[in-house]
Structure formats: structure tokens, C-alpha cells
Image (cartoon, rainbow, N blue to C red; front, side):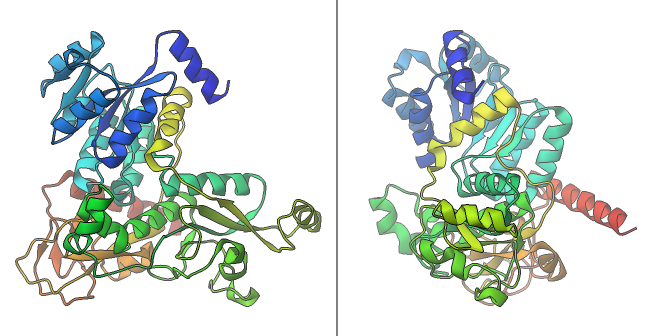
Amino acid sequence: MELLGHLRRLEAEGNPIQVGLVGCGQMGSGMVHVVHKMAGMDIMAIADVDTSRPVATFKEIGVPDSDICITNRPSEAEDALRNGKRVVTEDAMVLTQLESLDALVEATGLVEVGTQVAWNSILNRKHVIMLNVETDVTVGVILHRMAEKIGCVYTAAMGDEPGVCKTLYDFATSLGFDVVCLGKGKNNPINYEATPESCREEAQRKNMNPKMLAAFQDGTKTMVELAAMANATGLAIDVPGCHGARVDVPDLNKVLIPKEDGGILHHRGCVEYSIGKVSPGVFAVVTSDDPRIRADMRFYAMGDGPYYTLYRPYHLCAIETPLSVAEAVIYGEATLFSDRLVAEVVPIAKRPLKAGETVGDLGSPDIYNLVYPYAEARALKAMPMGLAVGGKVIKDIAKGEMLTEENVTPDTTKLVYQLRQLQDTMLATEQSLERQ
């Protein structure tokens, strides 16, 4: 049965998928409205440090005050859910403990919070859908492996560009095409100087968090998304930071191809982004060596080849995320996960950082980030982005200098640090065994 049929059946049976949401910002609150219009699924509990936001969101979809329970006690929250009420809490860990919830969506974008939510959800055999790619590129491998062993689903979300790109990759690869380049559009050139203050006016106009907008403008979000795409597919990072060429859709299959064929790539099989007229779309440049398939592609108006562009002109972020929730609960399937690291997101100093300072969050005035091939990042002793945040500078770092194990020490009390150590050891052991 197709997904819609399953959801309609669940609705008819009075047994909709019960979802918890962590983070009720722009994307999280928007997803609540989408799910409210869907069959077979309800968002029943929301965790946010500002409880007024989830309360307001529930009221917007018509939930009366009398049906909203605000509590930080798991037992009280569970009782409320069993009585058909919605739950609001400041403590995200409460949601990971609630038996009535089938799945959690993590939408904070904070690496440590995302790690704790995902880990504890998995320990409680609860599916977890990450609208938090920052956590995924840091410790996604070990979270996926743990979920597999326990018998639940850990997945990145459909709607985010990595998830949408993965569907294009799967489509093309399943049909026997070679994926030459998989990528996304970015709606403006990267501004490595962007800070929350420089973004404040625009953020207010767009009803965004200024720090989040700065993380978009300084390229961090794009680098994170490219790393997730590479790690999920095995496609490479062609050059650190990627090319980011200004290429419009008609020219993607002329520029994002190997150099020997007139393009800019050093080899086939890369992830990339374009600042041309591609955003908000995603694309895959593909090829086939079969003359009949090439003739058919010409017949179907895909061009003369040998390179062809598959283009999806939109990604709808949190609006599409409920599809990942449904696939995880109904089919036990993930939209996107990583089983190895091909790419690493590496922090670079936006300003001179002095010994003794604490490194700020993503989008802060302290760092921007670039995506590197994983092996190259390891050789440079680069500090993974997700561990650098909140770390201590132990040696002065010049503007434009990479944050490394030699100039920053991470906060070893964080769960993300502990899981990353386990993940690094696991992957190093596997690589050693492969070489034997």
C-alpha cells in the first residue's frame, strides 16, 4: 500500500502516528501546521526552552488551553497524552521517555541538544527524524549504527536538501545511471564575514533568528548539507569548500562535469553547490555509456548528452519532513543516513581568537565552516565543527586559520564529544581491518 493509503487507514482506525517535536522555531512550528492538515499523524508533544512558542503554535491550530498540559514531569506528560491532551515542556529529554510517542523530530540545529535527543530516543527504541543536519555530520554514523542494533530508525529529514538530493541520487543510481555531480543551489554568494549583528535587520524582516541567518550567509549551512550528501552517498568533495560556481540550470551538465570534458571537476562523483539560478532547487548531473539509453534520453528531450541534468526546482524543508516520519514508522525505512565519513565540516576563524576564549556557536562572529574530504581533514588534525563549538582556545588563532586539535580543546563533558570518540575509534578500527 502506498504511503497515503497507510496514513488514511491509520486515520480511519483512530490510530494516527503520535509525534513529538523538539524545537518550535520557524521550521518546527511550520511542521505542526502541516501535520495538522494530514491524515494519520498528529504532533502531540513539543519541547522548547520557551514554552510560549509551542503553546501559541498549538492554539493556532485550534487546540484549546484546557487541552494543553505544560509539564517537565514524564509521568504527568504520559498521563496527559493518554487522555488525548497535548504536552508542552521545557525539557527535551521528557519527550524521549514518553511511551505514547512513536517518533521524535529534532529541529533545534544545536549539535549537543540534537545528540542528546537522538541518543536517548534510540535508547528508548523511538524513531528519530533529524531536522538537525549539524548533529548528523558530527555523530550520525554511530547514531545510525546504534539505531540499527536496537531496532528503530535514525534518519535525516526529507525536505532538507540532503534528503531531497538523496532521492535524486537513488532514482538515478537505481536506473543504472552514473551520478557525476549531486548538488544544491545557494541563493547568494558566501559572505565569510556574516555575523548575527550584520544579519539582524534582514532576519527581523524574515522572522528568522539572526544567528541562523548568519550561518546561512557564511556558508556553514551549505557546507553541512554537502557533507551530509557526501557521507550518505559516498560521493566526494572535489576541493575543500567545493567550487560554488555561478551556474544556471541549463549549464549544470556543461560545467559540473570532469575537466577533460570541458567542466571544472577533477573527477566524476562529487557533491557541489551553485550560486547561479538553481536555488531553491536541487540537481543531479548523470550519464550513461549505453548508446540506446542516450538515444532515448534525446528522444525524451533531455538533451544530446552525454551528461544530463535531473532537476527538482524546490525543497520544502519542514513541510516535507512528515514524509520521513511516516516512512520511519510505517516502513521502518530512513530517508538518509551515513554509514561512513567521506566529508568533514571544518571550522575557520572569522576573527582573531585569543587563548582562553570559548568558541561561539554556528553563525556566531567566531567561526565559519568549510567542507573537506574526511581523510584530508584528519591529516590536518582539523577539529570537527560539532566539537569546536563551546571548546576552549588554547593557542591564539589568526583570522582565516583553521581550528585544530593543536589550538582548540573541546568540552569533553558533552555527549557529542563522547560519541564522536567512540565513532572515531570504530571507524579507525574498521579501516585498519580493511587494510589487512
